[in-house]
Image 1 (tube, rainbow, N blue to C red):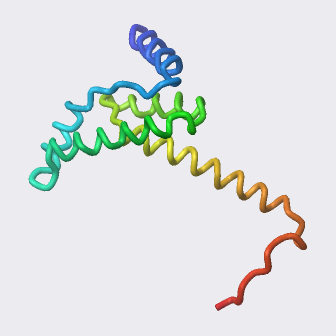
Image 2 (image 1 turned 180 degrees about the vertical axis):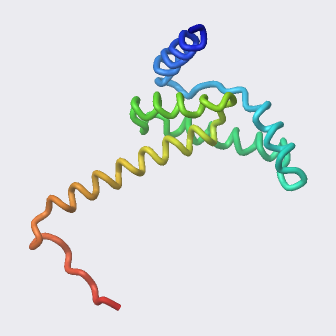
Length: 122
């Protein structure tokens, strides 16, 4: 029961926080990733990638829908240690999938005479 209440409070917080880029503590995640990826991966490289992802998120935050933000914030936190790279990937996938669907709807709604001619079959 306590877990359900805690989860509901967390989701409510994530929905309310969807208007700004969240502040994640990614150090623990990077330490874990570096220990698993050694000697190829390093803590410093992970932290650098996370900082880059946060900057990219800040620059694109207004472009993502509030629904996608809430959904992806919740998903990125399910595993325990959310990361900016994970959040950014989720948001980009959601946006790109929507754009593809919208493009297919527009294309399928066109009259066959309006569609561009297909190129040669080779």
